[in-house]
Image (cartoon, rainbow, N blue to C red; front, side, top):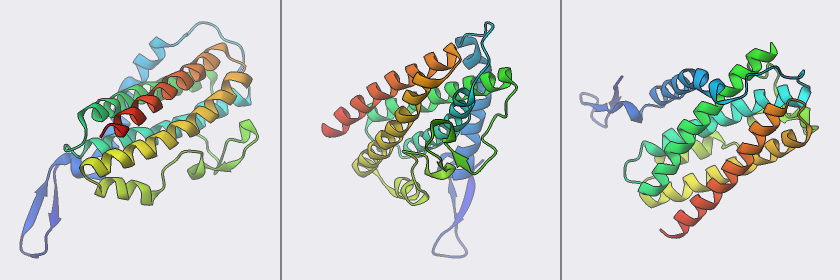
Length: 212
């Protein structure tokens, strides 16, 4: 899965490791989500459940997309091996933890007989805050992602924390609404666990980058 990249000399090519390729990282992220789907559902409650309302379905669809970017950000940050070890541990936890949660969301949507993704261009209608999908709160822009990929060492540490804290804060905002308004108890518990887990990760990341 290595790629060839042209250097300043057109007759010379440099072979890049697989983890420097955006495409390879994206494929890996999708594979993590698919493979973790079964495990994610086993962790959840698969007993008989009440009918989902618009908050249940909208939250799961939109949060799935929100989580996918968190996985990408974690993988992009991990592609620089010169970053802070403790922050790398958190990035790995985010990649695998949110990968499992993506799988769990997919399985719940399947159980509800709902679309696995938001098929419209607008997110968050379910919480009365309609916004373009790519502008959900906390999502990094393409420019932010390119800057992260170009950053090294301490600069990458600080930028990753800034992007991931904002990402988590946006996700917490969405999850808090689901806790209050979802109809399915399992969805409410799931959203509540996101609020707790991401709040803790924000504190950890801020403490670690402050100590650099």
